Amino acid sequence: SQQGEEDPQALSIQEGENATMNCSYKTSINNLQWYRQNSGRGLVHLILIRSNEREKHSGRLRVTLDTSKKSSSLLITASRAADTASYFCATASGGSYIPTFGRGTSLIVHP
Amino acid sequence: GAGVSQSPSNKVTEKGKDVELRCDPISGHTALYWYRQSLGQGLEFLIYFQGNSAPDKSGLPSDRFSAERTGGSVSTLTIQRTQQEDSAVYLCASSPGLAGGLLAKNIQYFGAGTRLSVL
Image (cartoon, rainbow over all chains, first blue to last red; front, side):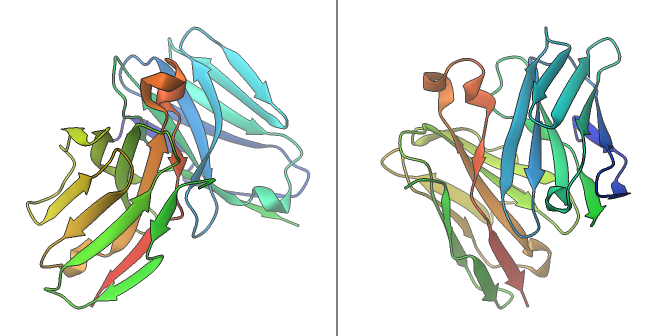
């Protein structure tokens, strides 16, 4: 079964609006990552947050992590049409080298 | 090369034929992963290499699937006697492994994938 599950499955917004995606997971983690996948392409790493961190920023991206609720959120501020993509969270636990990916959130930003 | 390279980008085959998918990881990356992604789905882990050995091949769906890695670099995923349900995008990723530090070992760099269609 998937360790991380993103919510919502699909999100449609207008350019300039903020987009928020959530990820819930089941077991303790060492870190959590967010990736973006444009149509027909591979995944691109966006940001990694460690289990002892609560918030992290990178440009227009803001990631939060709540280990007590086993959840994370990815906020994209002032969205652009180019942000249209699928977004996946990936969790790593224990000494594992293998992040476990969720099913993703499909984001469409209308110009 | 600058990134992870996969070939071919598209492969159409007939049911029952064998196919080989190739992955060239980022130079120096010790870890290599294969995933399968069906339409609109997440990533299904297939196999993980550290160097030339595969400590975790638990995701291979059947004995028709096999993979090897030579010289700690190029990897080949082979699917024998392909079935229609094998149709998917096969993604390869590499990461620095422990050489990249405790956090970097989990960050993966993906190729664009091979889209396999079994008719």
